[in-house]
Figure (spheres, each protein chain N blue to C red):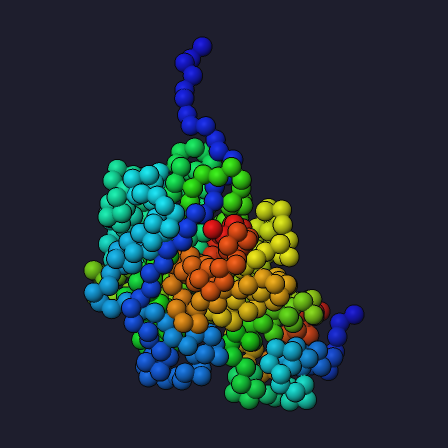
Length: 333
Length: 83
């Protein structure tokens, strides 16, 4: 008989202990963007619900945004970086391919020798991170995990693009998760649909730049196709997440979808038939679409505006380029 | 039983009205969704998804781009019904 191997004991659940936030330091209003896209403030408001978006000045880099958000979350959670069992950062706009943003930010936060890695799951990246952190904690592999969504999307926009550039903002949102005797994060519903790989994409690859003199790559999307998928397909995912959590819409205190576009948020809420008692995050109006950062940023704002939501249940769902999606119900810290 | 062109037009006009508030009598065959009715791409997609449910047809994303006029949409739905 072979010798038995040892491993960590499983835990019952995980929960989010605290959120942290950092936004771009410049308010970019619609009138600042309308010239190159031959548009108007009204046109942008009507199609997106955005009045202004937060963008970071040149000096405010993505690692600084991530560090600020992570530090706030750690402080609020009352733990030290050295106590982390892992740090996961989701980003699509880190200017270097390697090393990871997570190992740089983790070191600054005192997480020396802590496992650190980045994930690429675009606007679903934060919910992917929460799914992984929950699994790490419940498996016993980590007691605390820091999940950050960090983006400086203003570096990958084209001022003349009418498909997505005018939506985008910069920021980082962080969540510290810890072990819990009760379930504080429901089973994640997550997946990908690679048949729609190019529906949201970069204009060209690094190879195109090197070999063919292609310009700096920027983001594009097929808006109507994304809208249809983000509302009607994602409504199915959201319902499945509620079902797996064993709750109904009436049990929710808050709904925090990825802040992609106000029209998506409005139609999404309509499809889910949420009762009026559910507070819906609409951070996009003044922050813009910050991809992986949008859900933790919006939740952070929601808890500042509505502290009474603390302890309530929130349905969060991310969806974006891949196409990828992730949803879970969390208990708000 | 498949609906006639007139019946599809009447149903589509109701869906347009629900989404945009445009009077049903303004939704006429020769009207362009964008130029005459001023319907943006997001509202158009909402109307398309609701039309799929109401008329029990499939309207793929690639096809939506070809539905420039109300007649284009009505003809497509009438044709899709009978397939």
